[in-house]
Structure formats: structure tokens, C-alpha cells
Picture 1: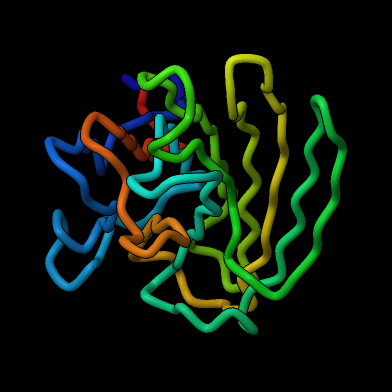
Picture 2: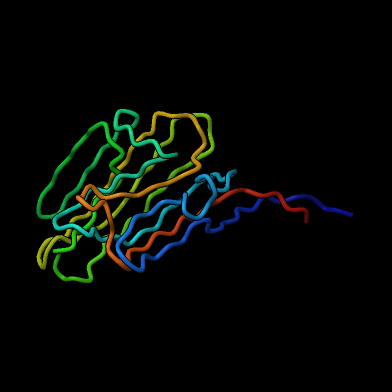
Length: 185
């Protein structure tokens, strides 16, 4: 005899990559035709990134291979030794330290969340991150964008705005997928 059912949240990791050399992040390399597993209630992207080019690098997050800036609306807000706000048509989701940042082992830590990636509504991604620019400068930042598309998310790409569009070796990205599952008890 069964006494009932219980909903539990399960988590898996559909993507986990640490770069061995300069490169980019694209779930297409792991999943045929760029199709991430579906059915998630939430995706969380955990990253430690450093740009291969000098200076502070903007990081864009393209969904389903869509690189058209007008399909995204982003907002960036940061504070530290300076305070700034920017809004634009872009897929800007975070920023990272460049290859010339001191100390040389500095990586920007970012947490990016997307709720309801399979819903038939526009998708929102929000990030919180810490960027260290020099021996004396550190910034706490928030960024978000809305992707004006109702398609389920099946591919995620992270690129910098540097000439190489690459991240350095030891940059790491994990994507965690969360979904509710009913179990019989």
C-alpha cells in the first residue's frame, strides 16, 4: 500500500568545464546540436572567469545561438571605488578581470540564475559577481538581462568582448539544473 507522494527538488550538472587552455564556453560542445537537457525549473551557472585579453572584459551570454543585441535588454549596476549603472540592448550578463589584472591568479566569481528556462515567456537571467581590477580595487556587481524570446533554452554560450573572445586556462563554468520530481512514499 502506498501512503502518498512527495515532491522533491533534484539537481544535476548538465555542463561542467575547466579550460585547459584559452577558450570559450559553449554547451553545444557537450550536447549534440546544442540541445541541453530540458524540463528544468531553474538553471544556475557558477563561474570563475578571467579574460584572455587585457583590461576589464564584458561577458555576454547568448541563448540558443542568438547573438542579435536587439533581442536582449541588459542592466549593469556596480559599486566599489566607483559606482555606475548602464542599460543597453545587449546580452551583457557579467564582467571579468582581464589577463593584465593583478594578481595574476585573479578570477571573477559569478553566480547566474535563470528561473523557468523552458517557459513560454521571455527569459530573464540575473547575476551577482565580484570583480577585482588591481591590488587596491574590488567591485561588487549585479547584472541582469531579458531575452525577448519564448523558446526553451537549449544552448548557452559565454564570450568576452576581447579581440580573442576567449577566457584563460583554468577558467571554469558549471551549469546546475533544478527540477521538481514527485516520489511515492
